[in-house]
Image (cartoon, rainbow, N blue to C red):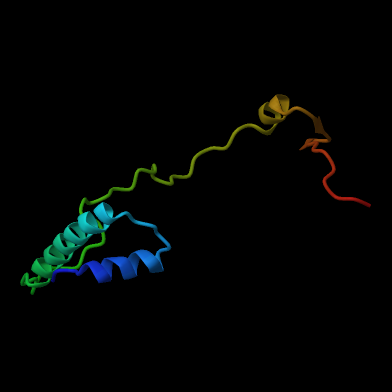
Length: 96
C-alpha cells in the first residue's frame, strides 16, 4: 500500500506538523515501506501460534517471599531519629 503525497500532507496536518517538500517526499516513501511491511506481516499464517505479549520471556526478578524473623524492636528504635515509649516519634502532619 503506497501512500500518496496528499495523504502524508493530511496526516501531517492532523498531527499539526509543518513539513518541508523534501520531508513530505521522504515520509511518503518511508511510510509506504512501513505499510508494505505491515501488509506482508498480515499475510503470514499464524494459525496455531500462541499469542504473546513480549518477544523475550521475562522472569520475576523479585526474591521469593519467605517468612523470616523480624528485627528486634529495641534495635530498630535505637536507629530511629526519635523514639518515645517504644514507638517512633514523627513530626505532626495535621493541624488542630
